[in-house]
Length: 120
Image 1 (cartoon, rainbow, N blue to C red):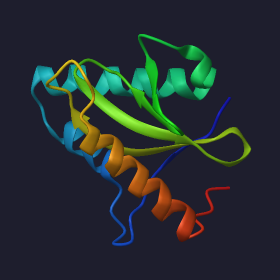
Image 2: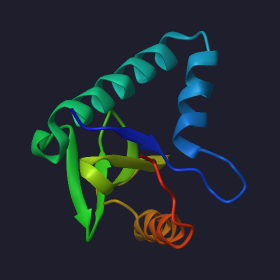
Image 3: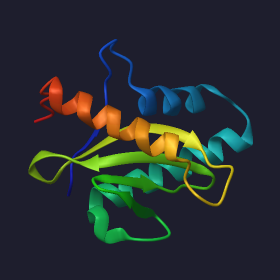
Image 4: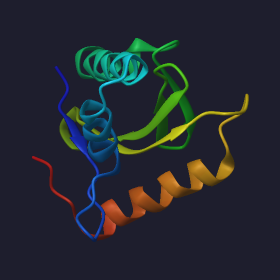
């Protein structure tokens, strides 16, 4: 089992956790389907780590990976002691993951390292 953590920015916001909470607050069928799929994919990550492979997850660049539930993408990194930190979410609209999303994830990882975030 791998531990899964949510990235918290300097303002205390947790983008992925807030997205999940937002989905759980909605009552429509599409939101429920998305929420269940995201939970399933996070569970797969916690059980198998990056060995789960496609279609669940994909390596993007350097330390950056993506979870791939439906059209949602959740970028994450491997962290200390075999844990993972979910950085942010976006809706995929093109074949290729936008560079700006990968760059944003790299900035979040740098922030994580600079602030010495300890998720243990």
